[in-house]
Length: 473
View 1: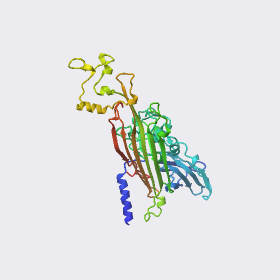
View 2: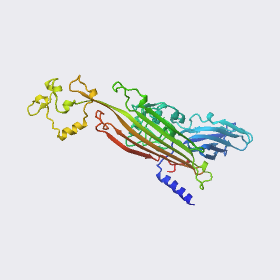
View 3: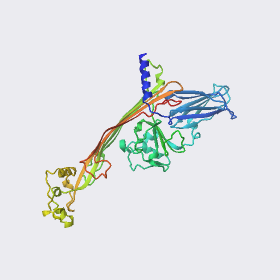
View 4: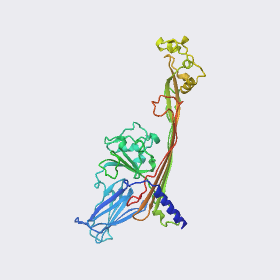
């Protein structure tokens, strides 16, 4: 009894925390059952089953022979149709993608019910006939096997016709660098709708980044709708990107990975005296999913409750090169002879006499707080890169390391309450920090004496909590 009360509290907490979502990312299966002459067969028994996720639903055809299974999670389903006086029909492996509305029409053959007609699901439900949506689906195989510089799923939206990359970057990023500037059929880049498991994932403050960026290894597949999609997506007037995370199955699965890039693999530039600048990128993590056993609560928990858990870390140490003109050592002490040699018009003028300072020496007090404040912000020239050929000019050259640390956790729980109801809980948390080597929102001509620290930026998302048949919250 105590364990039952604990479980009830857990489910209530999930309902309270979940955000509103309308499950646009789920699929539906519709069809018509007829005989060999094309006449409708009413009250035929239709069933769909996804054994991997414990989903089993049944329905009877109406007077027109039609059936409908709505709000089905993506995956592979077996469709079975039976009716008195007809052979049993079974379509194995009907694959439903994100937001797909698949139609499977069944023509039953006269015969004994013990005789089966089995077809491969790959040969049915291939053409979208139930909606006017235009777009394309990026499958899990494409997500995991296509090479991505930066391992950012958003780079894959350009696989769909009509989408162009307007980010200006060839490498994906996280945090404030997770740019979402993609134009769909020529639409404005800020008018796209980004959804994660049916919930809004666009940062509505900037319309330029996402609240959370799910790991590549945690995404099952996603769909890009380019035009003609239904009003249920709403809100935005350009493209819609529906991302579906992976779910657990009745068997345990997982992986571990690390992607490494290091300056030992790089060649130095001509200014670096044979030494490559520091460049380290480590992207590592793991995923695990399977049935969630709850001893003493559910005797068949292997087919009722499933979980998927993912964690990923990024450790980037990227070179940031400064190559700026700075005052010479003499000029820092007030001696501008090198500039005055170019001509009197270049000499500092004494406002009291309206003439160049005697000896081209501007009086500088070492105790002047204004002088000290300015000199502390402008570094002295580096000896090896001073420019003696051009009077009055010296160079500060330095390569610093810009650190970025990112971590993400993703949890998805799916529970089959009955054969008609299924509740899902999704939670994603990002934690990100970096130190910009120059002040943000400048022309980036400063020095590493003034930096911008962005510590412990975190975002969390409860993108969906729903039932199979209708939204739960």
